[in-house]
Amino acid sequence: MIKSYKLKRSLINAFIYVVLAILGIIWVSPLAYMVLHSFRGDPAAIPTTILPTEYSFENYINLFTNTKTLDFPRWYLNTFVVACFSCVISTISVLMVAYAFSRLRFKARKPFINVGMIMGMFPGFMSMSAVYFLLKILLPDNYQSHLSLVIVYSAGAALSYYIAKGFFDTVPKSLDEAARIDGASRFRTFYKIILPLSKSIIIYTILTSFIAPWCDYIFVSYIMAGVPDTGMYTVSLGMYKWLEREMIQQYFTTFCAAAVIVATPITGLFMWLQKYYVEGVTGGAVKG
Image (cartoon, rainbow, N blue to C red):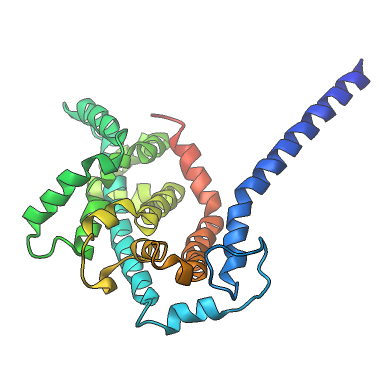
């Protein structure tokens, strides 16, 4: 009886591992293909073999030397600046709104929480037209700019408060009460006591706030459409131009190299801070 159970259990586990291995191969294959062909010497978009027959660093070298045609370093810097400013503003707003909903009690608290959660369920691209015309009203002479992108990415960031709020709900309220008795203000309590205990949710918020503008194409393609100065592009918009019919044969392998460079820092950062990312998610899921 016991042997048959162990055999059955071993077969089930073996089947699960085989399925997971197949799924892992399917998931990793496009990434491996992109990395391998970023070193391919032949720039053709449709290679004759799956694996490159000729390897070269020329694609990576061109990205940083052929700036008159590619201008990739400037696109990379634009994306980094936009992502950093958006990340700082978004992180501050998310943490402050989450703490306010977690600790403060006021009449409109529950309606605000409900409205925020409902609005957060709708995809952001549904509001693209409205956002575009609002930017034209607010910034009539500068609506197609990096400032507009920062506003778009950070203005609605507070709607993502619920994970951080769930985390703050797990922090004992007795700490706030003790600080209030000692004469600390709400902001001082938040800044000096709560934030030092919230390292995991802060890192989680920073990562999610940085990844969104770093990887976004939809909003940047809509806001920056028709900009004559290609130096204003971000990496997603500039690299997408390389995939157009007129350019893909010449820039496909360059696109692969650029994609590797764009993905490497955020992948490394995520792997380095993965522990805190998981703690932030699980900590914020304890209470709602």
